[in-house]
Length: 315
Image (cartoon, rainbow, N blue to C red; front, top):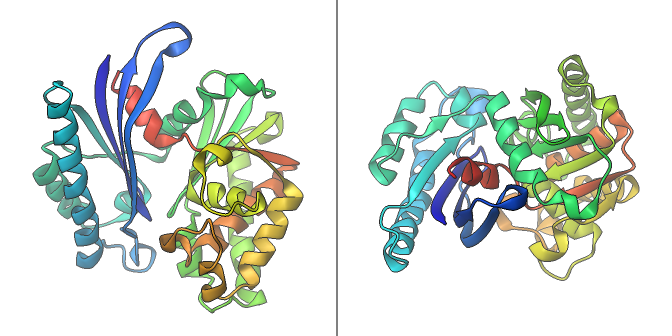
């Protein structure tokens, strides 16, 4: 048994998984010890300025200091000593001119150098994390795993491992800042965002044979929130959301509802995390356009994603 800590720093959120991992039949087991998420909006304004703002960096470092304390406590409490830790940063940090400021802050907090990974590496980790628990459902293969983040969306096609992937610069934060600026967004803004997304989806086809996929697997907060709304949950319930199946009709209806709602109306939705209120319309639109353009009638929703992939990589 190995105790590991995985930290995923994305454009919108920073997340922590402390887990015990054991090798074994079927690839081994991963048991959660602690799983946390904070909305820090690290990528706020990066699409326009090309830089991580001081305020965004400080929000992120504040969350990370709390995570470092948790890692230290869980290592000492269980007698493990130092926990194997990997910190991964994705789209916003890849795009930022001043990412050295981010790297030095992370080293001060965790004592490890963060890995600012490529879109392809992000896709591989997302696929590994998302697909380990799918066997029980016996979905048709190959899978198209789609990870909708704040700054980018990763597309990975594969059966037991990733065979083809593409990272695109469409994400819920980026599309909101670029297009959906009114409350609620105007029809012209929505059509502009849809056109931007569709152009990215066309580029994905150049690298990933999406038509070969038999099952669409959706990851990350935009997808899980859409699923929670479609399931009409009275509160966010990851157990009910994980491995649920949401139809294209449901996704389209939820997307329409979110894009026509005001910020105040979105905030009243029971499953809505406060940090997703501003960007959930764009996240839902990305999922909706993917299903329309690639012809999927349903999406299997996974609560396991790149964070779990990072943890498995430490075994």
